[in-house]
Image (cartoon, rainbow, N blue to C red; front, side, top):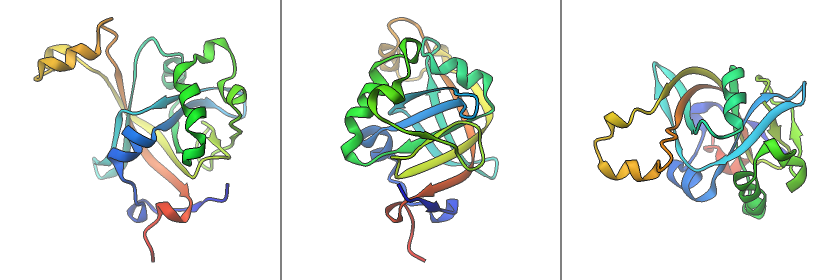
Length: 177
């Protein structure tokens, strides 16, 4: 898919819709070495922290992608047109431990512009990030007791903050000049 550079201040992203309804594909690892994994996510955030644009993602310790998040200094987030929803569902419901999810569902990994983690040819938006912080969720800090119900196995997420270093996308993701 044809994507153009989008300066972060020109990015139009309905954050709640993109994460919760559309979903994103999180990838980490090294495209050139064919050592990476992807997973579908619907939790996270985008914004500015420490004077830098950032994306925050969360990954449970049981997910195969976690080892790639730990060994990589970067990650990507990709959004896809609705016709690829089934592929995202597949990537969220299957483990990369069992095989190449991208190949199995028909996604085409491609090199990112500035980071080692892959993008996908079918993506209409690619956000490239360099990790700048991580932290584990601490259940003793949950102020709303209902949050604990998300963790029946006590497998609390690790948060990763990534500085957004490049964004490419279709015109739909860009403010008009």
